[in-house]
Length: 456
Image 1 (cartoon, rainbow, N blue to C red):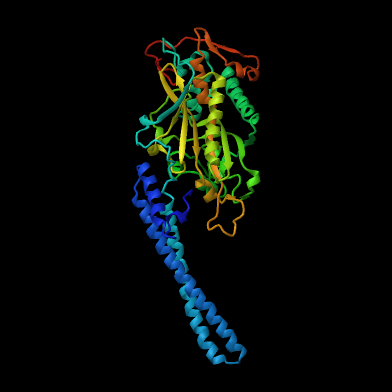
Image 2 (cartoon, rainbow, N blue to C red; image 1 turned 180 degrees about the horizontal axis):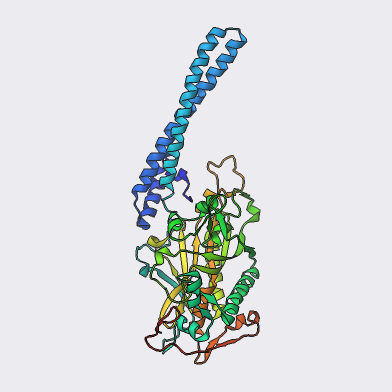
């Protein structure tokens, strides 16, 4: 799985204390055990000691073989036979040590992969997401004033059939209908056009990934809580939870010429999530569902200077401009250190205003993963120079532009009128002439319950 550079954990040049202190401090900021760092150091030390033993035994083996060759040339076969027997013993020892070495490496890497990326110093330190730092806000937040929530609005417009969705697909299933379907496709087309005009390369990704590349880009907990496994002929595969996953693997094993960078992709895919960790949350409507469409920004940058951090700011700004163009009020927050996933060094969320519940809700997640993913994927930066001690890897960043169904919920709440839903002006060219979605039925009477109803 994705992990840190093992060289960060190694003692060299007398500066190990400073490096280890950074790892300890990062773990403390994540509210994660600092002992994990010590465990990696211990296991790596044992691995390196065993590696030296293997190298020494191989040296002995090679030296004996040279002596054997010399004796055979001199016709001293008896002496050579004694050394051949000795070489067999050394070779057996090498094989035994190599088995131990592989086991030690597996143990070390297992410990290494649970240590999170180094937290950026600007990340607010807390283990409580209520302490996410608000960076800025935009737009005028509507008061509640009897406004309906998105579940009731979809019911009244008949833009979504949740009852049929549950019958066919199970919990959180849905059918988009009529103008609801058009609005979803309009957001996809507008979002892709929005990024394309800003120099992003459109990329329609596979929806299924093999286990090995998925393991390089997904977190451990995602395999149990988020990813759907696809079984059948051949090896098991996984449905993607975001286009970030296949795009991260797009350059698997490549050496990136610095002149190519930065690379900016506008990824589009349907996404599939089990949402095991969200049991009981947002069970009504299409805000949190198992299958949805999403447009993703994915950028690959140089690891030098502050290139990836400049790109991080640009990416969240691009998302802000997108929601400004839709006229949806929002706030941008910096996520607290204790809520970061292991891959992210820093993360912003863009939370849009939902007036019916008088709250901001997440529409965008924007993360700088530095070289955490690229290291495991083997996506190298340039050629190693003679004076460089370590290999360099590109930095990878990802940011939502638009999760379309969730954005539709926000549009419905912010653009509702007494007669129906107005369509944001920028989406008109993609709506087949539909600029307004009228209400076509009243809410059910009190006491009548179903997947498509809720109290405002």
